[in-house]
Image 1 (cartoon, helix red, strand yellow):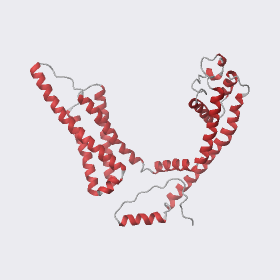
Image 2 (image 1 turned 90 degrees about the vertical axis):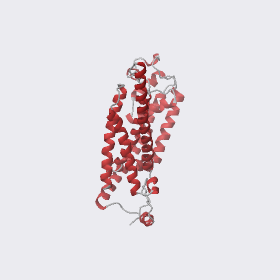
Image 3 (image 1 turned 180 degrees about the vertical axis):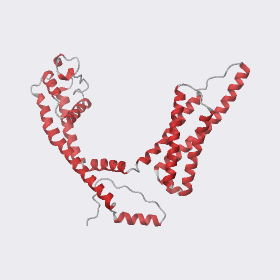
Image 4 (image 1 turned 60 degrees about the vertical axis):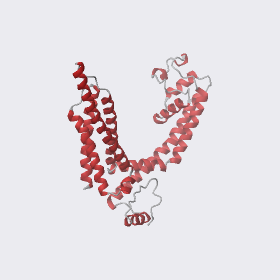
Length: 316
């Protein structure tokens, strides 16, 4: 039943998203909204209130409030309901005021500007409410595997990533000291070089961030002879271009290749473990199972997620 209810609310959110697009088109063209659109805004707000009330009818308040997503839904629902009611009241007052002015002055009324502002902020609230659809993506096994794999890869390879960062930091600092301020578009020494013909003006060593970006590009693209040629032509330090082959040897061929090899090996292990869990089911950790059982007997929900290396797994 919970899955059917979530599916129904997802359909409501999609229909609400379509309404937001239609209202945005109306606002961009300064078209007056139809009474149907104004009533739909209030109807959606009431539907969201009914959803919160139905969940509170099933879960206790501590259980409901324990999840951050439920707190987010409750706050945005209240704000959306209040704004919808205020806009409806304000719209009626403005219509009466415009009719009164038109009757006494013989004009068609004044242009409503505050209503458009309120509508704009209401659309922002609806978009915030639509973020809850992202929760449904987390239920997909492939998405869960992707996020868990990325987290475990980062946590498991933090030492070798720190080594790579130290290497890039060293070459970045060195290049700024040696070549800072010599690679720029109007430098006559760079005429007819591949660096200038390729218009790589943003890739230079004039400050730390620019130099870091240049070395990062070199790390991904391996060896770039354009940098070597440009530095050999523009630098007054003879032989300083040899730093690029040294970076290719130590930074790319050794450290970066180790990072790639470690990442691929760990990904293969996680993929094999996923296949094994799909066949035989996940391997339970007995202390967590007992703790979850104790919480369940007391009527308390216990939620957890295991991150990083599986160093706590019991051995056979």
